[in-house]
Length: 638
Image (cartoon, rainbow, N blue to C red; front, side):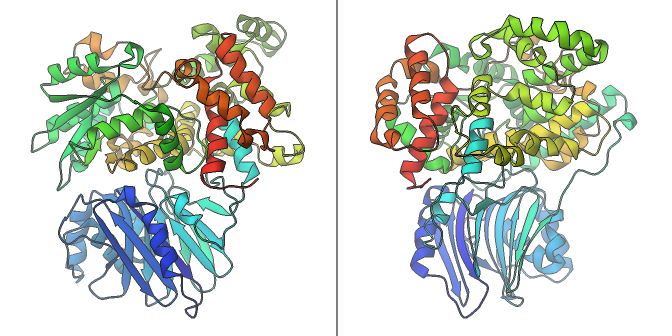
């Protein structure tokens, strides 16, 4: 994990401000606390902050190729770099280092823009071709590593994080109102928007190629057409998955610094831990962070899994003494408004581990590609319901019945809420039904009515043109297979996972100078999983069945089939207790009084209902607070 920043001027007669590049690079110091480097020549400036992981002695950046033609700043790991290096050496390419960075650079010089298709790993980088005066920006297939850019008149500014780009005085720090509208609808900002007008996230699986005449965006990866009907029998398919999974974990164990595995005791982390222990040539430690709140603490399960797997288990503890200070740090590191408050737990986990290791393997992505969420089970049940019941019966009787089970959906726990949310309305479109289930009903109601964001702020026509659900649905529509349930996994992979979970994991780990790897998102493993029918992943009502089958070879059934426990923090309780005064003060502050885009009277009503009337508005309150403090922290104007 590293961080970089740069600016490229279309005309070589113009030169980026060196002090600006240095300041932009310093903004991502936390991403690379070990080394700093710069490259300047006519028309371009590059800065890099390095976390040393591979080739500690000669892997510094910005790195120039042996021939002098190419320069690269790079964040990530390419796990097949040794095989690529051997191939390139046979073609006559020379190397000065042992790093994967130089392999990426030489791969570009040898194969041109198509080189990125050969990379197996996670990455974001900028390559400057000095001969052609061309800049190439690239981001990995599923968006594990971040990359932002601002295309201005005659130049492009780019960086690993948004906070670097907004230092460029050519960019006004104006809020993108459509992005904020989508944020309150989805709990995250979907790419390519960032929250700042004019600044874009480079989409996963894309290149941005810039020369003196134009900037062109190219998609370099999409899932090849699949026919799930041609899948092998279940047992054969599962063995293929187990082998590919272990290969992915083995590849991602490469490191020249201490490496470990995050172990919560859940299916995803237990799978990665088992695979790492089986395929590692050296000793691997499994790390768990215990929390004092019993309902959030999974350490007893992690301890039991570690004992069964015979893993060396390190149990760490971490408690946020100053929640307000932690909250402010999290918002600074996030860069953009974000609705996922499990960031608290992720930050504390990474903070506790950073003194022990520099690299950690996690089970991130397991729910999305192995069908592990409750809504995947709900999708399956509801799909049966629509196939088996006549439309008139659903519309006139059943929808009303299910809606009556939970008239105030956000406040009703458990199965009744799921039935009401999934069946209490008529929507025959599988994809839109799936997205509706993921939406907080109260927020959706307040947004659609104009109560939270007035129609004078975002008009009806703007809302229709930027409908966040249609924006997300396109991922399911493009899925190249027959299995419509698989298309929902493809959608989750490119939306919620990319712009919510992976963004949050990147920011909280990089805040602590820790690299977190996600072997369950190895693209070869993901491709193999999508050749299998959804029913192989979720047979009957059995979520994440493939991982359960893998773990049952090593763990007792009671550990594999225990109820899922979310990884998070008791923010719902903190808003009523440890953070009650903070939120009350924030919602009454001058910042809130001057807020002119969202309704603060509604926000104060939510807070009162949450703290005094027993309602649960945790997510909405967090989102509003994050939005307000984001504007304040980064001096963003409406």
